[in-house]
Length: 74
Image 1 (tube, rainbow, N blue to C red):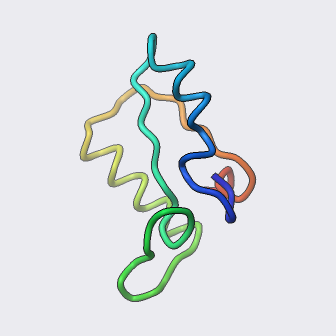
Image 2: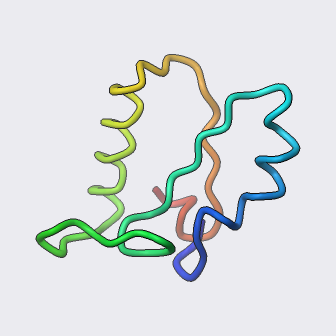
């Protein structure tokens, strides 16, 4: 999602895709519904590291990643 929204921006798309896809939505840290990193540092590179770790932790090998506005920069 963009800077002034939350993962809820994707509610309708998630509902459409759920019958045929596994849908995982992340809220951007410090934006939307979540707090930021404890040290306050947030940026595109750090958000990318978080996504990389998330993908690795779940063992995702094949997936589509979607973002809008500044969330697409990540």
